[in-house]
Length: 105
Image 1 (cartoon, rainbow, N blue to C red):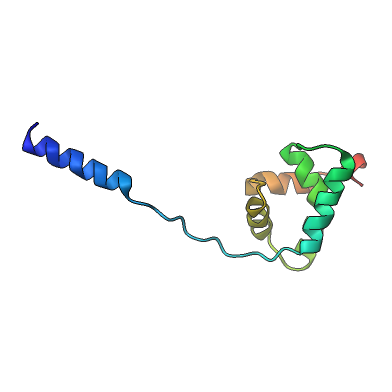
Image 2: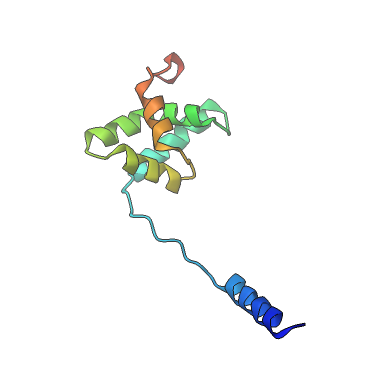
């Protein structure tokens, strides 16, 4: 093995072993009661998996309340992501601009 190749392999090995920490996202307060109610709603429906659109629809009352309390769509998307629901801002805005479905009200 040439000296240059040995050095290159050593650098690659060192780079691969470095741990990169992701920046911490700012905390967005979420009412524990809202989360509990959401979980209760999902359990009452007897369904374990939901499409993104269904999840946003089920969260609509909480999202609207958060918006009324001054939270931005970005704040809401970040809060949803912390709870495992990843949604693009454009998609969230589109779903919220659509009329609520009859079965969610």
